[in-house]
Amino acid sequence: MMKVFVLGRRESAAFAQRQHCELDDAGTLKILAELRPILNTSGPLDGVPLAVLSFLILLTAQRYNVQADRLLKTCRDLEYLDEHGLDGLPKLLDKLMATLWFYAGIEQGPQLPEQDGESVQDLTNALFAVLAVHTPAHLMKMAEDWAQPEVLAQLQPFARDPDGYEPVFSPTHIEFMTSIEKTHCIFAPSGKYWGADDWVRTDSWEANIRRFADGLFRFMAVAKREKFKGFAVRLPPELSASVPVLSRTTALLLDELNRIDPAHSTCLQNEVGTVGWKFEWAGEPMFFTAFGTCYPPDHPRYPYGFDHTYFFFQPDFVLRAHPSLINGKEEGSRARILASFNKQGMSYDNEGKEAEAERYIRPMEANDPPVHWWLDLPVRPSGQPAEMAESHA
Image (cartoon, rainbow, N blue to C red):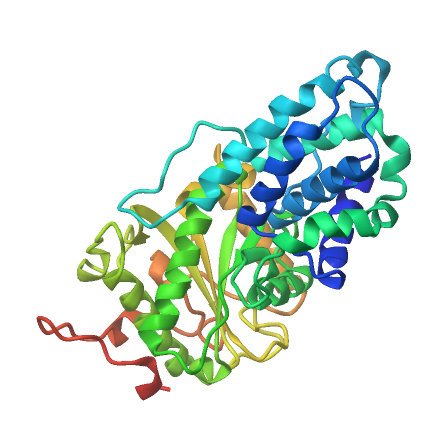
C-alpha cells in the first residue's frame, strides 16, 4: 500500500496537469467544504465522492511532498479495521481542512506562525489508510475513476490559475528535483523540497526578490511541521557566469533579502565571514548554497546541465532535526558526503573554510582559498538602495 500511495501521488499530479485540474490550498478547501457534508460514513463509500476524495488526498500529498508512513504497511491487517473505520473520516477531514486553512493564510511577519494542528504528512497518510481498508478495488483503478465526467465536473471549476505560483508545480521546483536525482549527496534524494516562483526578466531585481521572499517565508512556516529540508531559487544563467559574478550575485541577493527581512535582522552588519556567523531571515538562522553556470560538470556546485543560477536555503531548524546531523553524527555524516563526491571525481575541501559563510560559494578548484562574497555587499549610505544585480553581471 505504501507503493500505491507513492505512485498515486505522482499519478494525481500528472492527471491534474492533463485534465487542467491542478489545485492549490484554496481550491482544495472549497471542494472539501462541498464534499464534507455528503460523505456517507454509515455505509459504503463509492462513486463520485470516493473518486474526488482519493484525488484530493493524493494531490494534497503531492503538493506537500508527503512520504508514505509505516501505517500504510499495517492498516489493512484485521486488528486495524476498527481503528481505520469510515466513521473516522469526518474528523480526519476536519483536521486536514484546519491545517490547509492555516497554510493558506500564511503572511509574512516578524516571526514564523505557530499552529497546533496536525501535519498534512500525517493526515493524508491516515486518510489514505481508511481508503486502503475500505475501498481497495478503487485504489487499483483510481485514475480511471477520476476521469469520469461527473468527477471532472467537481474538480475543474476549482483549478488554480496556471500562471500563479504554487511551490511544487513551479518550474524551479520541477527542474531542481531533477537535479536532486543526479546529485552525489547521499542524503539529498530522501528530502522534501519546494521551489520559488520563477524569475521574471521584465520585473525589477527588487520585485523578483520580494516574490522569492514570499515563497521563502511560506516554506519556512510549513517546513517545521512538514519536515521539509530546503527551498530552491533560480536566477538567470548570466548571474553566475564566473565565480566573481556569482559572488556579487550572492551578495546582492542576501543584501536584498536582509533589507526586506520581516524580523529586521542586522546579520549583514556583523562580522560576516567569521566562525559562528550565520545569515538570518524571519528570525531563523540558515545555511545557503550557491550553484553556478561557471562550474564544469565535475564540480560539486555544477547545476547539472540546467542553464540557471541556483541558490538553496536550509533553515537551521531543518538541519538540526536531521537524524544524521544530531547526537554527535554531524562530523561523520559530512565526511560521508565529502567521500561520496570525491569518489565521483567532484572533490571539494573544507580546510581553511571553517566559517560557514566561506562555504556558501565554492572556488573553482577544491584547494583554492574561500570566496569572500561578503566583500561584494553594497555599501549602504543612509536612505540609498543597493545597486541592482544587472549592473554587476
